[in-house]
Length: 318
Image (cartoon, rainbow, N blue to C red; front, side, top):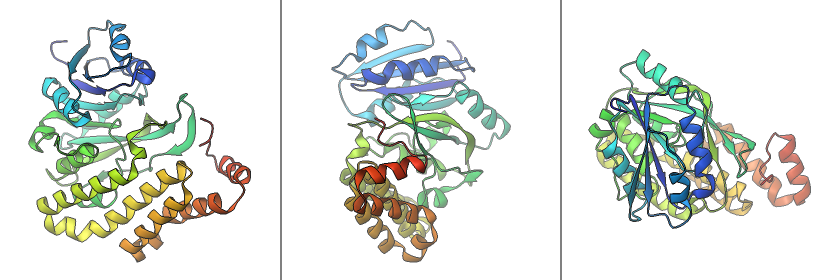
């Protein structure tokens, strides 16, 4: 395409198992004026074969030696031609109205630099497990986003390409949380320049082997991002860092819970309480996670899983 309005950038590395379904969800979009840039970051599995099966003229493939997802995303963004860029991980899925819905919000509010949608969590087989993103509505700015990163992903994001550039692009020194770092820097560009699209337009896939399972490394890198934000916005970041740390501990606690490491989940929650006690106690998400983790620790496994299903969660289906 000569003039795509949106550039979708997908980074792939040894993800052949889910890549075909992800590509299909992009190419089936109701808004068709986009280009799809796939960066194969030195895959050694069947990724090349999966990509070779597609002949859609909107799709371009870039191949590079393995350098990590941050470097792959930077390479993909350098090739993007659209006014907007949409981010996508190799194992997530888009609803067919995803791009159309984001574009509508951007065009109705030209002051926005980034939009993000709600999403549902699915398992290896594409089944919803009952978990979902926070139902956030409205706009948000830097300080609030640092405190509670309601975007919660990257496959649910569409940003102005010019805003990505003005924010400084992808920092390849941040290997895992490069997207959190980038979106926070975009939030610094203008007041409340980020807005939610209140619909489940993305499906975030949980499966064994994800990078999110290495919780200690994530925790260490988050501290790096926080320190970077303190340098960029010392007053706002300094005022919010304790609450931000508390919220992140709850997120890690939830991931530990889903991995059935209930003691670790409770340990993260204790750290979250220590970071901001009064704030922690006011948030029902902390109580829910603590209660679920205690049930997992104290109740027979079968009874605990039955309670999960009654609560609408099917975390063990996979």
